[in-house]
Image 1 (cartoon, one colour):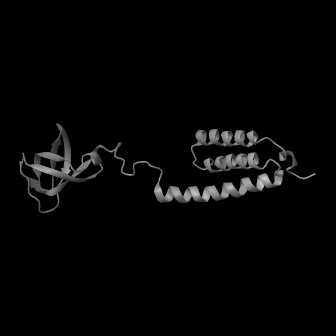
Image 2: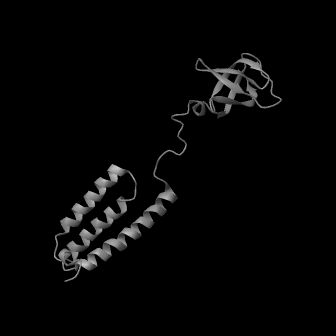
Image 3: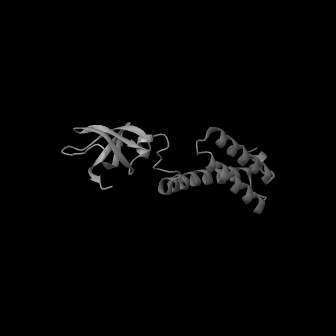
Length: 157
């Protein structure tokens, strides 16, 4: 008696159920790893549907080979094209959300001061050798923590 003889003659729906179980476990763990063996299990179910006389050992070998192949191909595609998520996500960084906006100078003392954007006061830092006057409009060029970095030139109103 061979190790995987119990799989011979088994309905392809068992492989579909196994694929669904792997998919459910993937959703619970969010590892983005079990999706590939789940897809391999679905392909083995399709293979058994096309050739129901496959032995249990052949089914397991096909599942293992497809799992490895799909994992490598899937990881390659994810590294190449990404997961569709926003790579420039500034949702939790209010200062980064201000980059590119115009600000009104509230007070300027050397390279440091304060600006106002939409009525909110922000600590600001100008580049060396910059000059600004209260009331000037400047452009935010970056952020460092909660400090806005100001472009060297002011914007004419």
